[in-house]
Structure formats: C-alpha cells, structure tokens
Image 1 (cartoon, helix red, strand yellow):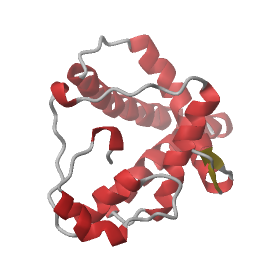
Image 2 (cartoon, helix red, strand yellow):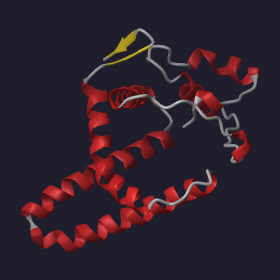
Image 3 (cartoon, one colour):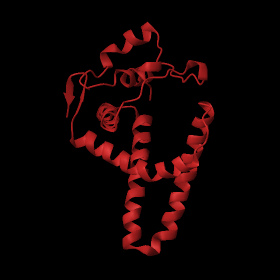
Image 4 (spheres, one colour):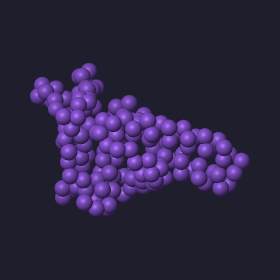
Length: 177
C-alpha cells in the first residue's frame, strides 16, 4: 500500500507504467502506480524514517471519515497485486471471524474456549503490529483504546467492505458505485 501524500518515484518509472494506471476508479492513482511499478519489476521500498513522515489533516467528522475509507476500499476491485489481495482478504476474513464467533458462541457455547483462544491469538498479532507503529511514531501506549478498538474494528471493517461493494461514495465532485 502507499499514500500519495508521501510517495516518491522516478519519472522514468511513471512513464514506463502510465498506461497501466486504472483511471476508471474514483481514486487510487497512488496505489495503482505502486502496483504497476512492482509488476514491471521495479524496486518498491518503504522509507522507515520518522523525518520522512508527512502529516495530513484528518477528516472532520465520522461520515466523512467513513466515506474516505469506503472510497479507499472501493478501488480494491481493481487490484491485481497478489500480496495486496491476500493481505486484504486476511484482514477482512479475520475481522469477519470475530463477528461470526460472537454469534457462534451464542448458538454453540461449547466452542467458547476455542473462540477465546482465537481471539487471544488475534489480540497478540494486532498488539504486536500496533506496538511497532506506536514506537515508530513515538506515541504512548493506550491499552484501554486497544481493547475498545478490538471490539469496534471488526464492525467498522465489515461495514466499510459492504458499503464499498454495494453502496456508493463521492469524492471531488465525482461519484462511484
């Protein structure tokens, strides 16, 4: 993944792949450029240096935030990069599993131990990834927010994917279904 707010590339790399960019999508020129350069054997790296971080203004309300995320998710219909697709499916399915497991426990309480084990495994993986991000951005650990997020995030991911697949969103005067 990449973000156009903090993206650098050589002009030659762009010219080599410009015909592969998927302009039919509402946004995503940054990600499609990255995927095209990668598919042509170009070198793609992440500059893990806090001096290179670019800050952008967040959306100013919840609806705008969700609309942004739906716009980002809707371009996934054009992804052809296997690593990105596999990662997206893992994120979606693991969060769908959390939601489904709540229903499963209520119907089959005997599976509670297995489900709690799976939740614990997901918490450990998520905590590892988040703690690395916190260290990189020099942010304090807020464990109470992590646990709250563990409960909200699966619903947020599910709603975003459903909205992206079946709804529509607007951006810069354009609409996509």
